[in-house]
Image (cartoon, rainbow, N blue to C red; front, side):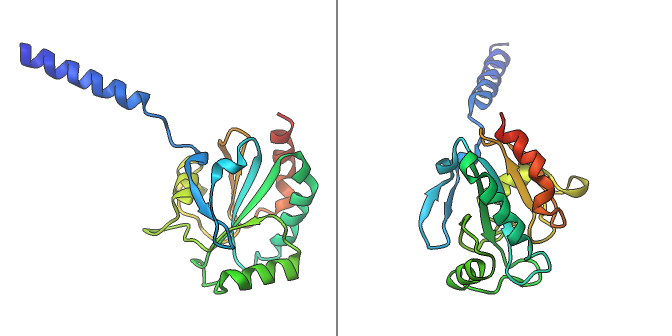
Length: 183
């Protein structure tokens, strides 16, 4: 009887400790900017974010134009776009970081924050993307990113509130961004 009571007490204690553990937050992750600087995602606390895996040689690459327009429209209202180049889909981002910057700024005048190339799926997926996918599943409840220009919308508190597929044009999520900015 004493052993059973000890076991139950231990299980209750462990359950309580697990419940008290703080859940990971978007702001707990570190990322590397496209110029090689390590930064904390906590830099973006209080902002509405649109996080996008991007590529320079994709059929969806012209979305850079729409993304930049969104950024320009709302950057003064605590809105930020974060672009994460990825070469996992048809090798459509073969460029190095310097070439990506040159392409994005020269072709689309991209001014929003860009980051070093990452994997978004698989064993080597960036921890930030593992988190994003776990917070908002994709089509048919799958976690995998299906293609370039998948977008995650994050509210001011760091909650991943929506996930949009590659074919969703940036301008079509304007209303969702405005709702979050008005809160």
